[in-house]
Amino acid sequence: MPQKVTLIATAAMGLEAIVGKEVKALGYEDIQVENGRVIFTADVSAIPRANLWLRTADRVKLLVGKFKATTFDELFENTKALPWEQFISEDGEFPVVGKSVKSKLYSVPDCQSIVKKAIVERLKQKYGIASWLQESGAFYRVEIAIHKDEALLTLDTSGSGLHKRGYRVGQGEAPLKETMAAALVQITNWQPDEPFVDPFCGSGTIAIEAALIGQNIAPGFNREFASEGWGFIPQKVWDDAFQEAEESANYDQPLKITGSDIDPDLIQIAKKNALEAGLGDLITWKQMQVSDFKPKEDNGYIVSNPPYGERMNEREEVEEMYRDLGTIMRDYPSWSVYILTSHEGFEKFYGQKATKKRKLFNGFIKTDYYQYFGKKIRSNPTHKKGFDA
Ligand SMILES: C[S@@+](CC[C@H](N)C(=O)[O-])C[C@H]1O[C@@H](n2cnc3c(N)ncnc32)[C@H](O)[C@@H]1O
Image (cartoon, helix red, strand yellow):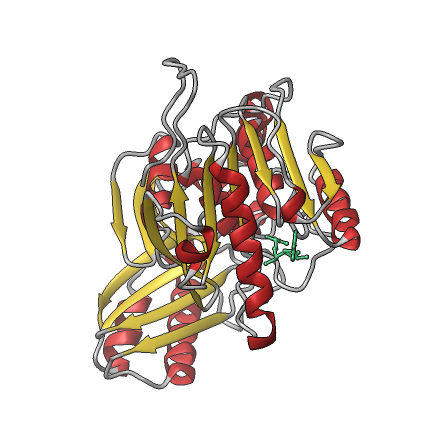
């Protein structure tokens, strides 16, 4: 078993700093935040822990090695020189995927097959196998990523992307990725005992992610990870990580989270998703149009992903909704409002300039996260700060 591993938590553009803070919150220190990824070195137990706990990362990859490669020979020899046998078992199945950007070695299929051959040779030598490798055992997805002639070889420890929490049994037309929803919540200073509303909740992603955060439930608790079958990670390390997650969950934390949407079918779907997430009836779901929303308490939070009005025929309707929300919220200055939209005129229709704006990509759509900080009526000095990343 390797003493230390270097892990790469991949992140959507704009979310890297939040992923970095999450990695730090897990207790890891040697952290580099780069474009699209966060790199950190830790002991092997970080593989289960990072997969279980990172709410905003896309995947966790294990770095096997990196080197400069401008010829196929260099790629082959440097790949073969890496200690693959420390990770891949004798019967391991290891398909190779790849990408290449701005590099001399641009033919991805060729790079993939050279990497495959080099690993096969290395493993045959190390395991003393004369014939072919069986590849009937655990699954290891190798990735060769070449960027400006630097080759990065990784193993995907996650399997399906970490946004797949295992609770989405239904969805609407434009569901938000779970990782992005968790980021939207973590950017706020919301505390679990404060009111939280998503008035355009669709299938409920933001409200569900808020509830998971509010009760400190590990987002990966209900799913499996590719690296659960890897021999070099002792079963005890996985058991300990799952036990830590179980013990850290605060199921007694009361929550005041509401999700509402104009579409009754989506409310039914949101309810099912929340049930699947193990949240029972912790979240209040309500069929309602935004213009009927009326806060009942002070110091609440709206975190929402309303329609963007990208189709011309929806534009006016959407602008009217923004106007309605702005008019309502003007009477509730203790509420903080966080809205993700690609509509560049949002502030104009809402009727107020945001305290802060942050550029984020919702998939391929360029959006802004408009943040209106409420003036709290009673401030509670014991509250922790959120991730102001
Ligand atoms: C972009 S989707 C939200 C998706 C959601 N974040 C999810 O993960 O499923 C916008 C939602 O706004 C709802 N909506 C449209 N007009 C509305 C209105 N006037 N009042 C409340 N909800 C409305 C739609 O039904 C849709 O579910």
